Structure formats: structure tokens, C-alpha cells
Image 1: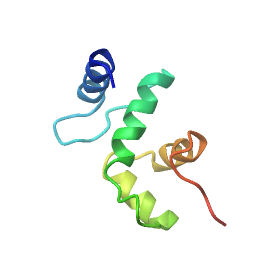
Image 2: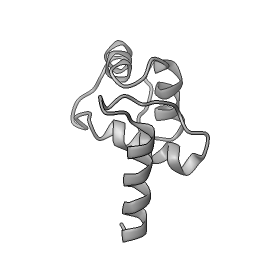
Image 3: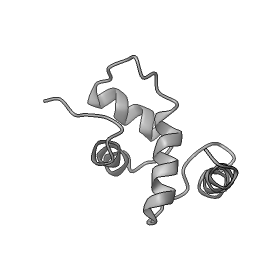
Image 4: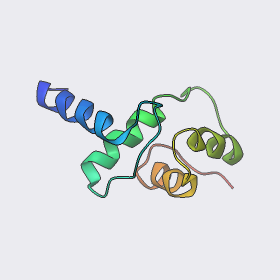
Length: 83
């Protein structure tokens, strides 16, 4: 990651998360959205398989619109959905 990419990431995280580490809003710009999704997904253990209910509870810690964020995790390829 370049220095500019690190600065962009850090600025996006600082601007979109409050002091309690809650997401203030979901950015419309794809680049910022990807940074924030990566930040959130990094807080999960990649070795684990999570149920939809567990993912919802995890996301709710950061933002009330868990459906949109969960969908973005899947659409952007951060996780897969099994029926």
C-alpha cells in the first residue's frame, strides 16, 4: 500500500467513524465504501464461519443498517452467502 493509499484510508476511516467507532454514514463513493467495508471485515476472524444472525449482530455494533452493509460485503466479494 502506498503512502497516499494509507492517507486516503486513514482519512476515510476518521471521517466516517465517530469516537465510539460507529459508522456515521455509508459513503456513496465506491472507493471510500470499499475502505470502510475492509475496515469492518478486518475486525472479523477470517478463519470462522458466521451465521447471518451473527453477522447482523456484528454489523449492528457499527451501524443500524445491517442489511445494506451485509449486502455490500457479499456484492463486493468480502464474504459469500450460503443458503
